[in-house]
Length: 461
Image (tube, helix red, strand yellow):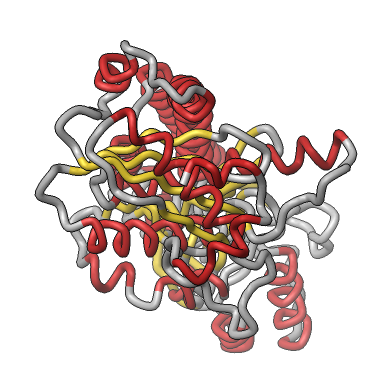
């Protein structure tokens, strides 16, 4: 972080000159990128912006219009400020025209009442800038080390955000690309104020690059994602223009979050594979494997002394039969995303379940509920959560949820699963005219005729 003019004025080589701010006091927080001595009237080709210009004034224009134009030229270049020694050209005060022009452009002008060694001033400011740059590099290196350690340790999003707050003391929010809040850390501030009307506020903030600062909102935003699969944004509250350290901080945090999600999905894929294997064996064989209960229990889904309910979650838009291989792959990707959304819904509603993609049309689910559970209440909560999760997925999709009969024996679970699949297939694929999705569908006597046209599996009923 470059020093401000206020900080520079505290340096001893400048203090001995008895500095006084005579114009543009509102710009004292301007950052000083470099320091330059100028004793020529044509300055445009010598400066590039951000400099603190030192001069005795001997080469500045003689008339008021010329002085005003000179100040305008410096302001257009974007210098940080102007220091004028009151020894040679002026000895008492600066011309009112110069001061008025500087105030109009909010350009800080500082006078020095005593002769000042500009070489000492230049050396001191250059040293200050170099120290700041070294500190910035060290801070960036520390940030890299910290978030590399978090990434290797598989830190959860909450821990990553906590580290962001520890590093900068500012509130931070992780959101989806649909502007739903996934996680946040208030840095000790009010959560209600931080998240008030979040979706509306977030939609109004767009950045052209992967990382950008919105001055109006005071947000530093970076996209979160990997492998060309962006899924969220990380937002850091940043009222002033961010320095390099803050940009490094938010980008490294975003990288840690992206890697965590990839690793989590990899772990999830292994779990889904184990679930799919059990469900495939259960559906394909009329006689359940003798070790199925033990294997399911090892996955955290007890099947004995429980109420078991088959559920089929089917996207409303699927590739028709005879599809090309590429289209079939796309269908499998949709089903994998839907399986992930279903798992998320089950966790949110605290329902034990085996979840897997067994065929090319549905996500197959076997719920395991306590014997005393109210099945309808659980199904209502779960189906609502599935609809919400599927709508908020990377590829939002309306779904049909078919439900089988609740049973209490593992040997009967196959019948409930097949029944759920047939119910889901019997519901029209086209969305309702209202665009709404019903919670879930059950088998009714009046639908048997429609189900009988769906295939030979209806014999399981």
